[in-house]
Length: 389
View 1 (cartoon, rainbow, N blue to C red):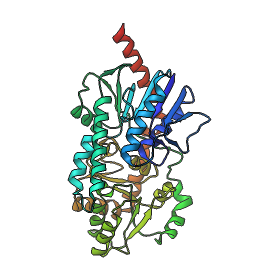
View 2 (view 1 turned 180 degrees about the vertical axis):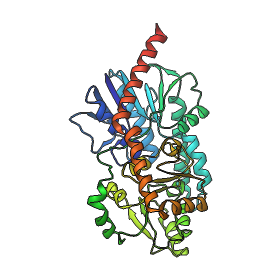
View 3 (view 1 turned 135 degrees about the vertical axis):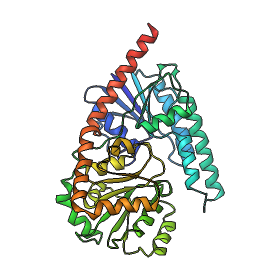
View 4 (view 1 turned 60 degrees about the vertical axis):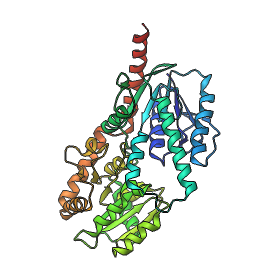
């Protein structure tokens, strides 16, 4: 097959982008694969052809809308069996991978963020960006377009519900294909080579319990809850590592000082070696208010970390059987209880970490996800033939 992937930035740093790169490279072993992107980092161009889409990089509204217009022009006169868009980057794709449903994400963000300290210019550009994304979703997410029937790949059952709640797609082909992890890159054996060194770098000894929080958009992802939960633990030697960055970091630093947690919190910033950080932590803490299916939770589990997360999309796929971590109510009391339960018994902590790794090996690795994606393409093309017969 001739397959085109459409993503604004193709890299392994951002969740949606990483999913595209991992699947595209695997499908390129047997098919002709082209990636249309503004930037391409760590993309194996000996396997995958990259077509540069020269959209502006700033502001977000110009990047998003400029990329869509230019990408559609680049693709228009080319012959592809499948055009696979990561979200609504173009309006006339065959397959849409759904990592977020923007109206739902906006709804949750409004509950979490009350525009504290945000200037009028920023409010306007954010509003305009939201308007453009929702317009693009409405234009793109249809049962059929000029290429025929359209297929959808939400990454979790929760995301599928959100998609069909917001858009009239009941007659479309929809199949849940989750996110994944590289089983070799993210592996429990990294503990043997990196754990002590990373802990020494971050001024933690080998006996301390380390909880890891990772990502951006700290309001939505629940960093305040993570900090409050740490304060409620009876173990005052426990440490919270915060990997990532956020423009409102000072707000969270003030919270840490107010709660007297300066000695228990480490600010790691953005880490290119996140796999080393996973290897040195004990539990992955993810009290997010909204996700489709967080890549970080899967990667942490692949490294043998139990995961504590709230009841959001992806949680039941990963932890619904009660093993490999805990799904908890979104409150500091419930999170702190799970943190204490998992770390108070070293044997339980070890066993839950092993179970987390086993789940990823069984269900959430990129080879399996690439095969599911390819199978969906075949199903969609056959479905179109039946509809036109």
